[in-house]
Length: 274
Image 1 (cartoon, rainbow, N blue to C red):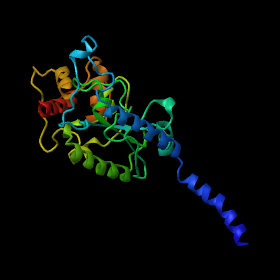
Image 2 (image 1 turned 90 degrees about the vertical axis):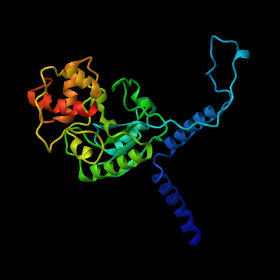
Image 3 (image 1 turned 135 degrees about the vertical axis):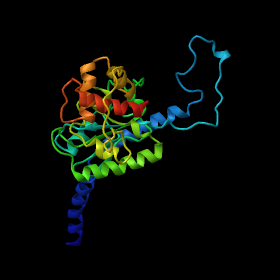
Image 4 (image 1 turned 60 degrees about the vertical axis):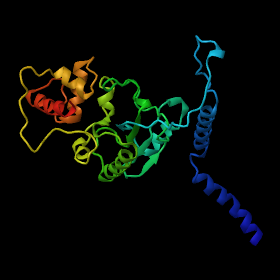
């Protein structure tokens, strides 16, 4: 009887192990890819970095002892536009999607770390902020489990703030560099939609216009296009840039036209970014 009981227990233990390692296969792939990158960094001289137009005997490699890992300088916040955290995780673990993010935060506030902070995740896509056109290479991407039309839960925002606190302190990220996907890709993306940016700004993650003092009417010489560009927006499509700005800072109206009230907000922010 004891022997039979043990034999019956083995499949159950095996099934339990499998159920707790749902992403064991993709974790293995992650480890293998990271190992390849690590081996590439150890190559001396670095592979594929020779000066093509110069003879080999006129160039050499000597390793300096003063270097470090590149650090992120921006945080880009997204909403997933999917039905669940599990669906998003599946999306990010399929090679065919070619998309990912460093962190996913569920509606319940649970955080899933999916890409090492020092590695480049595919979350920003074609984007621009100021003069930076490769946001994937200098940013961390955070996905919030949200379909884009629902409120963000208190647990989710609380976990986001905790994560941002850690990232800001660890990488010394400027307050102005906590932005949204719509900010950097105004012609393509609306996320994170209906997001409580002021809640974050009040805690040092992103900038916000002054609410304790009356906003000023801009002078006649105030150029709204230049102001949007100085803040960081891509103004190659002004209606899209205005919509992105209003989605972030106005929210009650995201039509692609600046009202006087919108211009007052823009003017206040412009002076913060100058």
